[in-house]
Image (cartoon, rainbow, N blue to C red; front, side, top):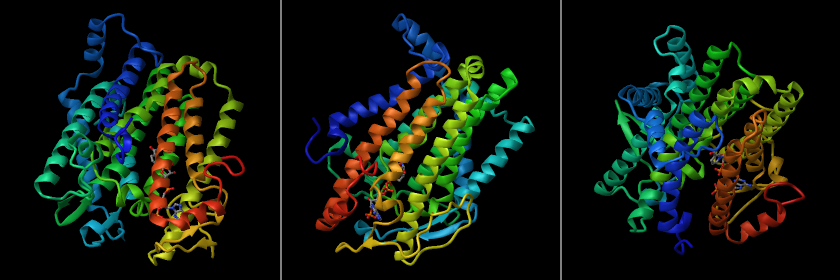
Length: 439
Ligand code: NDP
């Protein structure tokens, strides 16, 4: 049982989650290396120790690659041109509105070009990531843990804390600093936005590209499931980059503090855990190629595109509706712009709290239809590994579903608190949470 009023099970839950989050990516890494992505079960502790040492020892080169990636992205974040967007007023900072330079899309395109150039010229073969997956993972884990400690104590020392519980572990886990930023040549880079939008998703995509390139170099082909995963991840990462300005007003940015949970999962958890499927396919390339059914992969593509369409256009409808209401809407022609992404004169519910709630477009069918679409995409990633039977590929969708359901619960509580009776009226108007007519 967690402590009352504390999220994620309070201190005991936080400790459990920190241990679990450290074990998980390393276990996946060992499973890929020694069991082709199947259950890894060493015969003795000594064997485990040797396996771990051979697979996950951090090296100076791996550390430099990780830090290099971090610094290049920081440089892009500070210096590339972007759309200037104001954040929501921060009540704990006298309603100050931070300004964000949303240039993740340029950063994303430039990073892709840079990756292609360094790979083709041989300066940095992309396969380095796949060949040193465990070492880079270990570097990212160490780096994110150290960064969490630094951020925690720096915020305490400089009195930049908010919503403190005064329980060390809980505060460390949830974070103490709401808007951590650094200044580079008079340009503010918001570290939470930077980590959430760029580090995790870009590194994830490069890890997957690396697996695809390695498959090509080893076998002379990129298998259909690998192409499927590349497409799925490209769409997902691209959507995050093209919609960066909408993230500024999301819950993660205006409410969550930058503590261990976000730092660790953005810098280490998301890229290395979410990359599992591509490496599973790589490790089982022969079965993967032989057992692939073209009609089945085509069906997966159709489901993926359908889910992506709902996910993207639903979020776009809400974010544009809110931006228009606040008078900060800017039409952008970022790729891809989907039909039904902007609603003209939608129906909405006015609330006493000030913000209005959309009850039109996708939002009239279910309150979290975009979560359902996201879960559907997560299952598609896992099912793309079907050629080689195993249970670990299904860990991600199950984990994602539990995480997003827990997020739903937290969001419901927050909205109930914010909107009071208006939230009850909204829930009556839109009674379903995930699947219209069902739940
Ligand atoms: P939402 O996009 O649902 O945002 C929730 C907030 O939107 C609420 O707190 C409320 O904030 C506002 N809101 C709720 N209903 C309405 C409405 N009808 N009209 C207008 N505003 C409304 O959730 P998230 O930020 O959790 O998720 C965004 C996306 O990110 C999702 O697709 C999710 O699946 C994905 N995600 C992916 C993760 C991953 O690891 N892959 C992790 C987490 C999220 P307000 O106070 O402004 O009213």
